[in-house]
Length: 300
Image (cartoon, rainbow, N blue to C red):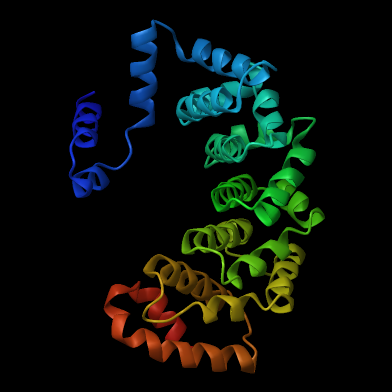
């Protein structure tokens, strides 16, 4: 609780730097505090949030607040794993149909937080009768939403669902998910935050191959083929430069180093672009991951 007190005090002052340094409060501590104040345990609080989501009279603001509370609670692994037993996946997934962008955003965030690094919850999501439909809706939000916050959270949800899951990757392919990645990376309107999420999605797509240290499977080779066909290497390399976002650069270097370490054959055009952009990175080389930087240097 001491951490919550420090966070609360930092939010009350006018020091923006102190507020930023304090970051976000610990979700589990907040959930515990909420339960202590209201005298209710987590399952009760989760049911109450779900009841608000299912109530047709609830306003978008009330549903957004309920989703925020739900996400805070399900960041606790046990609570996320209880979504299936408590039949709470359905009311959360239904919010993807909302016309309110804040509700859409929080629904995607809830889904992503529930399944992230949580194989049981990930499996529970995929076993929901409406999971295929929900997945397609998340893809559409990631592609078409006019609100970038929704797109960021939708891509976050996709990356969390897909990681280490052949079944989820199958849904991704069925819904033409590959088209999403170059469309974001090549967009001049997409923010660095959205592009980083797209790069994280690409990392999730390769998670199975990385874990097994094997790209020679039929599925692995099909993914490599898509990288070539969609010119995703070119899209990533174009984003490099000394003035680019450092998080973006690090993510791109890591992905390129991953491809190199698994024998990816760069085209002449890709090598030419990498060589050109690599020169721009020299002034900031000391701020980049040394191993990834060295690996990329080995191909030019």
